[in-house]
Amino acid sequence: VPSTVERREEGSVVMGKVAVAFAAAAVLVSCSVAAVMVGRRIKSRAKWRAVVEILKELEEACDTPVGRLRQVVDAMAVEMHAGLASEGGSKLKMLLTFVHHLPNGTEKGTYYALHLGGTYFRILRVHLGGERSYLDVQDVERHPIPSHLMDSTSEVLFNFLAFSMERFIEKEGKESNSQGVKRELAFTFSFPVKHSSISSGVLIKWTKGFEISEMVGKDVAECLQGAMNRRGLDIHVAALVNDTVGALSLGYYHDPDTVVAVVFGTGSNACYLERTDAIIKSQGLLTTSGSMVVNMEWGNFWSSHLPRTSYDIDLDAESSNPNDMGFEKMIAGLYLGDIVRRVIRHMSQVSDIFGPTSSMLSEPYVLRTNSVSAMHEDDTPELQQVARILKDLGKLEEASLTCEMNKQVSDVPLKVRKLVVKICDVVTRRAGRLAAAGIAGILKKVGRDGSGGITSGRSRSEMRMQKRTVVAVEGGLYMNYTMFREYMEEALVEILGEEVSQYVVVKAMEDGSSIGSALLVASLQS
Ligand code: ADP
Ligand code: MG
Image (tube, rainbow, N blue to C red; front, side, top):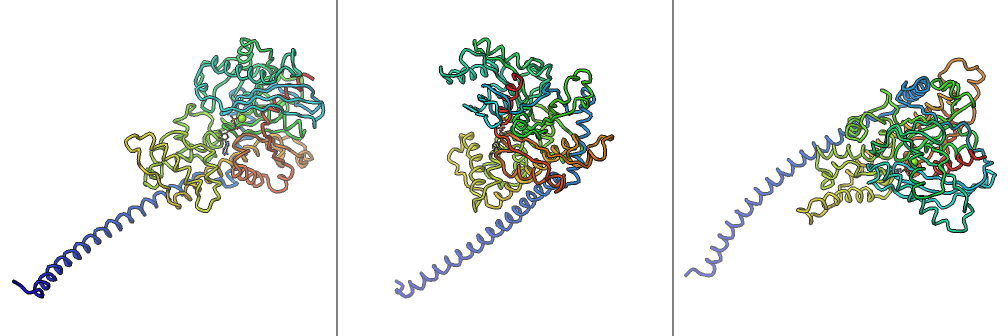
């Protein structure tokens, strides 16, 4: 029987062997863990480099130095001329609106506007007391357009609008001063229309994701009037007004130096006051007055100077209107979010930095421009808004994967969040700066950019004289996305120069297109 000492010694020998074995194993394991980690780190560094490379390429492709913007300005002015010279002479349709006079502040009475935008429809009533200061905007209603209407039928769409109008009227109650009197309504319609008068015109095409093909070629005002008559509503569609023309009307009502209006909402468009003798394609038709508002439909503007990326090309190809509205797809609210999504998706294809958000990124339009501005303007120290928005996208994805219901979605790392903010910045900066170039193009065309316009034959004194010019701007993108607005205004000063910029005033017009359309109808009555 071995002594306790021996046993202890034996024991210690055994222990020693185990310890050596353990130690050896530990060294082995830690070696291989280290190897794996080093391998991973090298791989993840390579992936990160690939991601950073994608960002760099994006920045280069979206670059808008002032020289390039000036080329866009010139192209815009040239295309405006071409579109005015002949039907189909340019991608800019330069549509007649038959609006010769804008409201001047003497209008009186109660008028209505029904506005079909790209995302929202609005109904409101204005009461006018005959002085500019007496403008009372009442009962503004704003609702998202139910998405099923966008690809329904014209009958379904207009029945819905008439029904909404009926409910609006019902709420006015018995004490309404328009009892027994036919109500005069402006139909603010934010899609391209070929007008035959101020109150009639046919739809040329849908934009902004609407797809009711049988509606193309139909008279838009007539469709609404018909739907309201069928409901027995005593309402007269007195004018069919493009949303930009509404914004111009409100701008002019407050300030007669307003000659241009631009909308940056779901889509983007501009109109301006043109001399009728410059509208060469319609000479003879327009002899009665000195000027007419022209709806440019600038969303369809195109120039080889526009900084286009592979993301823009793919977005266009996969949209409901390929090869159409190229400018709009670079600057408007419907699209900015989707450009950002495409960049993030590209990055997630070369690296797994976005975790479970990745597969949701294949879903078109899941990332809204509202989210882009929320991320871009996130001023929390750890970019918590960015984390939340990306996480929410990941959760969406999770919900669609029933087999992985319990997967925890964790925040993407801070450096990835910073990367996303940078993408938002690049995409929105390009949008804001191109928008400014578009505006400067119009100013050039009307000789308000300090250069005397692109036509010859202006007197030298006219060239030197700089008039105060107001540009009325409205739309959800412009009103709510501060960085977009700032980039736009900064670029406008860059393009025009400090001196000329002093004469150009950009004025925000909240709900301008609806209110202004009602004012326009009022001005037709007086
Ligand atoms: P519509 O285009 O229907 O006339 P709006 O002019 O209100 O409506 O524009 C709505 C669009 O504006 C939204 O679809 C979105 O693209 C953009 N938008 C609204 N709010 C924001 C925001 N906070 N940040 C960025 N974009 C916004
Ligand atoms: Mg709008």
